[in-house]
Length: 263
Image (cartoon, rainbow, N blue to C red):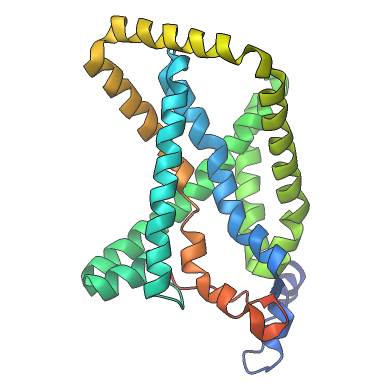
């Protein structure tokens, strides 16, 4: 069993080795990949669920987009304050324990564990749905085994170490950013000439939705769609929990420590 562990996970690290930090350190761009992947995966399924919740009232999507942007701005501002108070790492457990009480810190820590499990499960399930939507229907029975295999693969990769797992996802990360950036720019540039018409159609659709649902129904629909896309914001906490990682960068020639930060 020991040789199997060494084959798939690697040999155990010697914690007394003074060069260990240099061996597991990451360049700044790789740390960006490791910390940003969580937020990017969340942005894949959150907006989709919001759009689905709007149903036939797709014209209301810009209002949800503005609400999401405002929420992200508020989260970033609050996390900036947390980083100032906890420069060595300020995850939910530590912040709640220090500022509120140890009991509430345990509650926050348990919530984080549940959040991590759900984030991984939903991300893999969303990826499987997206992939198998491109395949013929006869492949659908393989979707669940594919998702389970993906979960096992991710678990194995992270057991190998942070540096090893991040190096594997570097091309995926930058291909994701490049393709989505191109898609957004292409959509905006190709519709520049019809923006007035789009704005007029949106205003008409909003008016029709108000006539059909009323102000209360319109507000409740927006609130439900916004809540369905709340998964968009998971992952932004990583930068706060790992700010100790960035603090060590200047100590090892712009290397980034791969030691796990406290949650």
